[in-house]
Image 1 (tube, rainbow, N blue to C red):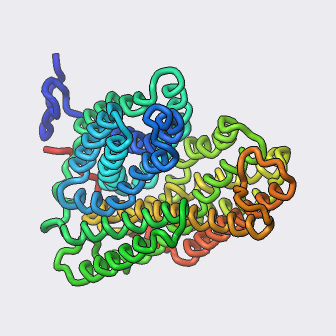
Image 2: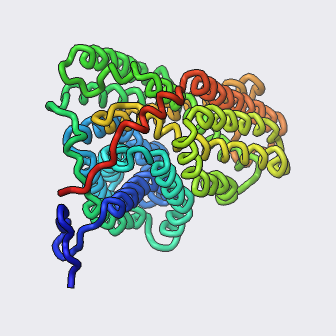
Length: 503
């Protein structure tokens, strides 16, 4: 016998009782964690499967690259659009539509008979993922209001579990079942996500922006960020001279987008947002800090294998970073809600920068147990300290009706920062390596490199790269320390009210 429906509430699904607002908030958090975890998993798990996919579909190195890159390109291009759509048509509805599209694309990827269809499916996954991840954070801000920092901290901790377990689970599926199951596994998890999101439904009607979606602005944003991302990634892989047109197209479409937003009656990205102090500073800091984070993660992982660690060992050595996120991110988010975010947005990146500088001491395998472990500890604690506060500050500093677009801006800025930094740090490593050796065709920080001169040149290149990553992190710490206003942050926390239960 079903429980009676309390006054002012109705069952969401036939035969299911209605839930209290607190329970719905928890269900909403669970849905956003599930949805975002799926998107994060498919950004990383596929890397484990690429060699097996290459053998089965005969796609070569370039095909492997585009199976990975097509997903990232779609994400970077559509974060802003996904946020703008959520602001106007409902963040929960847009989140659920993105999740459904992601599941449909996962089926297509799982059954793809050739590389071309698989690349298309991956791009479609990225489209769904952009709408899903952007609106997951905006939805948390809407539902949790003054507790958004704590909620985003929990979101970060729980999605970090997926980041931690994903490559291991993906490797097991590829080795013992089939690479196609890394996509099919999305289906049961995605269906649970959709059901939980529906059960946690709250009324968002008062929080939505009015007016039609700025279609020309959305298209220009997608073209601008898509061509810039393509040029950065492809240029780093081949030659920037070969993709000059991508930078030109990105600059032209970005200029047109800026003009459109400045003159449009209902712009997708209101210029007034960037006059909000904490919003502007938090996003500038995000660009610098996330560039440092991914610069360290990508090249440290490669360098550890250069030092003689296996791929599994290199991945295992980064487990403390994910563990720190799981256990500490929510606590730091709650502390930032209570005391203000400035300390955490300056101290956290400073620790990341110190960690990168400590990695300069890594010259031999045994150095990991001294310089490496201390560096990893600083990096991990710094990352856990800043990730929830910086996201909460960027979202909460925008007016409530712009929560979706604010999330889209922050997601776009973090991804562009990481792409640019990885491309530039890789270029610096290559330039230093080439300057230290006369060997033609040699690869910097290459696994299995034995020639002493080449190894010394590789170590010098890695150190230069980590120095640049440290500079980015410390610059982000300085920007946040000088620019973030705790007084403004406290005013932002006191204004919004939690979303009421749907009546």
